[in-house]
Amino acid sequence: MDGRLPGERREIRISDADRERAAERLHRAMAEGRISVEELQERLTTVYSARFGAELVPVLADLPGDPLDLSSDVLATPVGPPTILRGGFSGLRRRGVWHVPPRLRIQCSVGPVLLDFCDAALPEPVVEVELELGAGAARLLVPDDATADVTGLDAGYGSVRSKVPARSVHGRPHFRIYGHASAGSVVVRHRYTLAGRHF
Image (cartoon, rainbow, N blue to C red; front, side):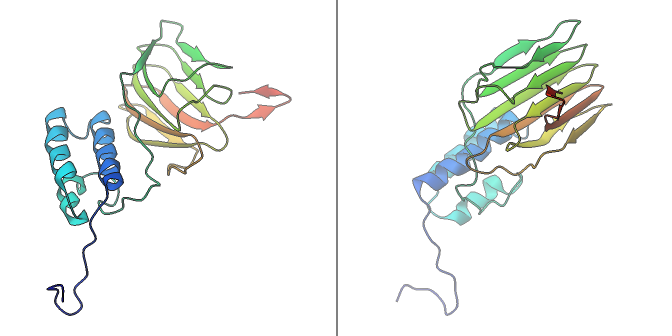
């Protein structure tokens, strides 16, 4: 006998990998501005001392996703400081073959922004793109098999449109796009090809 009442569900202990996946969600929430650094530290203390999944509910319940879904489909959040790219009055463009760091911060007060990731080297499965934009439109072109989550992006007086799936899939590039765009539009889509030209 294990002391359970008839019909009571047996609680399974969580693994170190489960704790790490819960911690990854918390780090992502802080990067998106959902929780503060202080809240992150408090919640991580609970996560790393947890023995059962139910103990993770209080620290994950107010964040996106099921707090008890610790499946491996949740991709790791990139760590380390972001690479900062600043645009001038003519805007900012990256296309062709270029190396994409796991974390990008794009700062551009005026002018258009074009980030074409389709021919770029993507060494990590997840790329975080933080946008700090003023006026002007932004286009983010991602590979055909990529997914992109834009839930953390605030458009201010502009608009946000994503034409690619949001849910991450293992084995495919995934982009987490968040931050703020004061005015103008932000579009995330696959690249179009017409008569051998890409746009």
